[in-house]
Length: 410
Image (cartoon, rainbow, N blue to C red; front, side):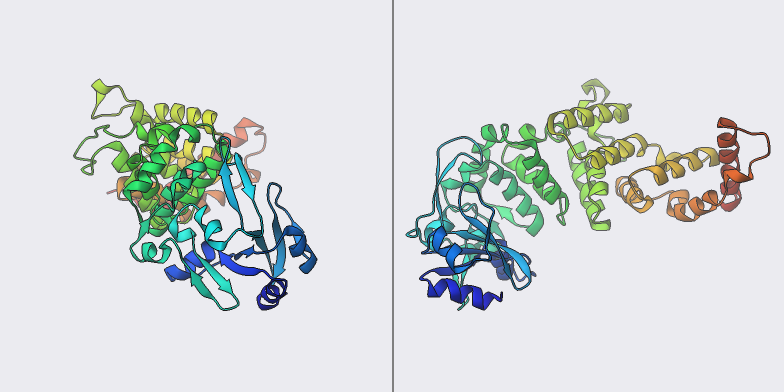
């Protein structure tokens, strides 16, 4: 079904049809819009189902349908009002009466830039709460106090600040701060979902800085908040404390690679500095082991994706020693460990480069050295070797091949 036909059928039945949500926002931002969501006002669920027999209902608490439009499965929802009557994002009473207006539906949404609609088929913009002006001003602003009714909206506002490079205005920061208590009761998967999208942003640091500005970082990501104020040797870290360093590193990695694994590993690489004994500062000896402990606690509280956890553990363990290795045996061991890890060599290198501002020669040329080592096969082992002896012979030959491939020392 074409969009024009879809809109015409509903309008002929007495309804009004709107494009809503992120597609409208991105169109106004001058960005390439993606998935389309539609909202229908003035009709009951029964009328919509009669007009659109192809619609498949997927909403439980309120009518939402999947409808094939222009070759895609698009969400179509009835205009609705909501009344908070319980905790969390499920604690709403929903009114989908045909009398609910487009303005009332938009009023329940989170921020002004998400509270615009394009009426079909004319394409006229409905913007009762100033979303377009806020987009032009690069401002994230809550539509109303209803922002408080779903605490994850606080994370969403911080994430959108990172995605779009926008600033959150003071009243919205205050609303975010007021969400703190309910956020602690939200399902962990909702928090991880927002973290995932924040890590995909051009500057992930804006997400964490916005949460700190709203007083939420300590409650949601205490391991990161613990880095604030942790001094470091000025000669190596003129940027300031461990939190500032971490934010710079995660943004630098984001500029190098779209990999979520690399970005998460950058986020947690210095996590152990948050638990360094105060008397040891500005040094952080042993922060690698403390970092592993911190990441383990984070995972116990939130249940992080398994690949994130593996990538984070690997980088925490290796990020300090990687730039210092000079002996071929240790270099071979690390290169082969990277090759077996969940991170690719370019992803691992992105974190090391961002952290240390340079790469050792063996990492810069690591792909070539790995190819040389992997060209050595255990089936060439001397007769009579078995089990671990073959493994030891193979590694010895790989080190020998690496030594021959590396530039001679002066």
